[in-house]
Image 1 (tube, rainbow, N blue to C red):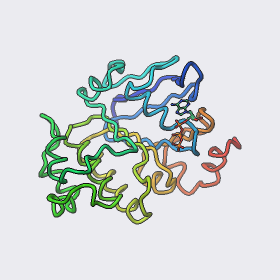
Image 2 (image 1 turned 180 degrees about the horizontal axis):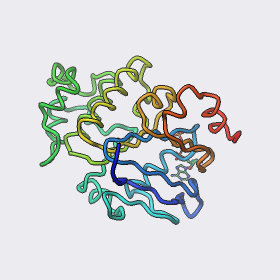
Image 3 (image 1 turned 120 degrees about the vertical axis):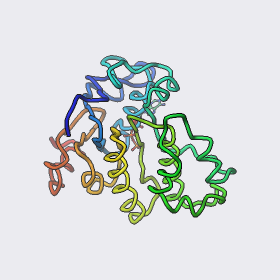
Length: 235
Ligand code: ATP
């Protein structure tokens, strides 16, 4: 992996009503790289993701996307290629799979045919109402929708929320190949530590809003002890 970071969080402090929830976090991702953002409940992962897409104002620090500061208008950042897949997934339940995908397509985004190649199951289900999809299928749809918008930086909050371990085992490697093929920079919030480290290039562990550990994923694979120590604030 080479080149400059396409997305950079530089010493960010962010929170709610002037009270910080995340303090002094720095991290960066280059084209085609996946950064896993790990940490226990309440550590500040979602807060970081919201700040990263411009949805929460920074108390201090800066966020740079594709060489420019992130805007406070989320849609503007999205048009520049910074896309968040929220943990609520943003899928229209009453519409069919195909209609959901049609609505998400943007000029310059990945072709629907390619998206169906990544997620062949969605093609076979294209006439199904989304409310009848399983959690894993809805998550595939949410990722497919994000790809159709043509992101350069994709932020995914809890890909695996409510999914079976088998569904997660299927989805994460697919995310890896999509990041490789599309040269997309990805920040992934994930509870399945080992699976996330298995596909990530780097990882940041948050504890109580602070970075407890930041390292290349390769150094952390098989080092559950180190990751757990950071998770539980024993560093
Ligand atoms: P989880 O895994 O449970 O989603 P998280 O790591 O994403 O946790 P955040 O949701 O970022 O954690 O929360 C970080 C801290 O900020 C927590 O102490 C939380 O209570 C607080 N917080 C989150 N949202 C708000 C809000 N809207 N107003 C005030 N405090 C908030």
